[in-house]
Length: 632
Image 1: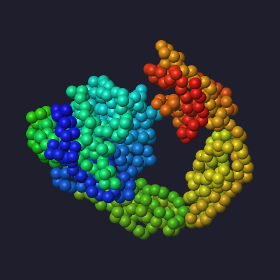
Image 2: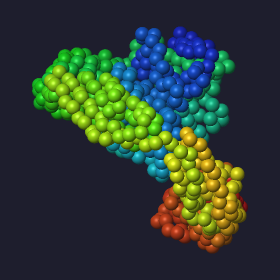
Image 3: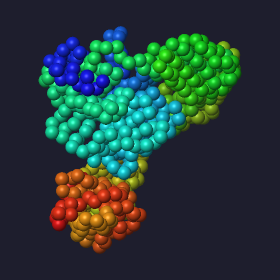
Image 4: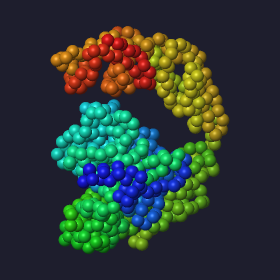
């Protein structure tokens, strides 16, 4: 079947009847990284000046902006879910959006970068840098369990379909991982530089830039592949008999879709999904369940998690009579197969409504006049109305009001809450203490240590009086900080004068400490060099070749972020983040496997790195600057 499609595509390269192409986007801004599932297509869009995720329902011709005001890239859609990489927290995280409920969830919280996500059913895969290189990770949304799929080689561009994950690695291979058996198989190897992987059924779609950018479709069931008649397209994704991709023929980047065959698509098993409204409340709680499964199911079985009989309605309405947390399961079927969606602890039913018990907090509870205080309702029993008495003759009926005290004094606060079952009042005597208006601060500071070898990290502590609200530090080396208690690293030997200006609403004050910090010369990057490179010979083990790095300086150097590469950067070793090269010491980096020590490190490879006919070792510091090289 693959070869037949290939013939039709090549023969109909000018867009013939069996190969139709459609331009999906016409906006003059860039639309990139598309993904397709059923009638849904998502993409990355620059029309608003940044990078947003957009969704179109092609059947209903409805377009939705999924993200706003964040840096969001590389979306993927499957069933009712969209995932993408998101930089709102500083690093790249994975986020997920449920199309039916419009709910957005943060999936990853690791401080390293997680990128290039894909989703299928309850599984999400992505590319992860938490271990120093590039690994593939998998998360089961139903159990929230994460699995590290790769660990011994840099791996990229994961794609998922059913229980199979396809990805590329630095050995110029396409690999296939079976989630059920945890077995990894080499699909394609050598003579290729694959990227932009996509998988559907037994077919892997990918771009190759070994001799240019070409698009290939490989069937690992028949072990046959074909070259698709695309000219330098980007980000291709396959779904059934359709491929979407980015094309720059119109100067900006647009989304195009081509249909590989006009024949009816092969029937597929359904993919289960649903949502509930509401999913929390007091007993007795009546909930409407709505099926959002794809793949045209013809039968449904619902389990509501409370021991009741299975329900076979399409969109059932069910009442929970007892308090508790309930897991809901939906199984959908059609003539091809079936699928089950489980939402753990999805329904929360609380006890029947009782009269509320009043409680609140306030922040701050003391300060200088005028003092603005934020009051927060902490009452239990689901109150529906609130009455606050702030103790200065003023009141509020907001749930969480803010109030400003303009006069000095101690104030008693009371809160009365009500619902359909009754009311309750709590009073806190002398809870808010307002002092006289603020005075200008008197600046003072301390530092530790005040002397040492470069690079010298110094912790500065504000000792100012009269409650400053802003700080301006001058560290004497043309650097500064606005933090209250900053840390600063002096990289150059010398004597430094430190200045602190402390300010508040009433004024500012400056303190200067002359020649306060003394920095002596310590080890620098120039003190670290490659002292030896031993190339392996034919028949030798990987641990018989090695490279040696020496610190000739007088201080220890942390090697976090440093790396060793060979000629052409075909192989890269990153020093462990916790490793320190002691002064006047040499560490030997062996190519093979072993246990790391202070003087011996192991690359962990099973084959040689260095070319025994001659090679060059390059040493880079954490800023990516070439520090040393040695040719043998």
